[in-house]
Length: 200
Length: 148
Image (cartoon, rainbow over all chains, first blue to last red):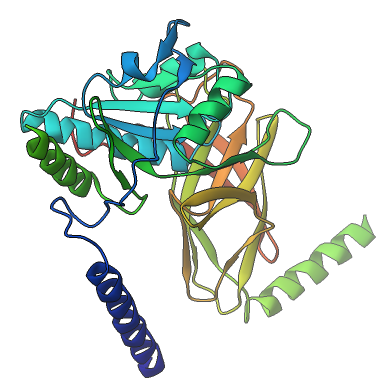
């Protein structure tokens, strides 16, 4: 027991030191610690909306928007993250912030427009589900620097490895910051509100 | 007939002996989240408690779906990789929670018959030591702290 306590204290200390070193090397981030200095995330994409219409990033990101890449066959991580993003959006709405939520599939073979529409409606009535051809999805994923890979297996129940970051995108300025799985709805709402205020 | 009786008697004798050192498995909170109409899969979660004094291991699960598997999710640099798990060890005197983000049961091939709130999914868990244990997964709404 004692060994465990010492172990975790060391870990915490190491993590704190690591974080301090990392923080010290970063420019001041007014809206929390998740900002990265890059403008290379995001950009133009062409995908299919829930009605099957061809849409671009300009049609989709018309207000501050949380963008997540996943697939609907995933019964655990993707619903969990999508529900969290939806909850952050509801919290922001209660505070008077209008924010959109977008789910882009990385499994266009199985995720038809109808499937992504129903999947996203499950979490938030305004969540936008996007799919497309394999090429369109790949281009969107590359634009956002996300990773996905269909696992081996020839049956219809294949799994897909994928990135789990959620991006906060602004209609005019593009990428603002990203969130990890560990971020709570409260943290996302707070950070997003800060970025929205900073642009107001 | 005689042979059967004998075998049964031996079995009884053996079980009472084995009761000295064996896992005692209890499954609680078996639940699955509701799915949208076109969903192809659903996730099942539960708590498995072992009040015995030997470890046991969940090695299989069967239910009335085209494919049912035990899965776990590994996270590396923000990338989620879901994987088939061979089994989950339930240590003596311990508890294992199959919770969102970790181990879960994958019910695959829903084929237009989604998991709906109020339904129960009968399933059989297979343990290395304890053998088969019947459970029912209650289909519940995805808990959202925020009610909209």
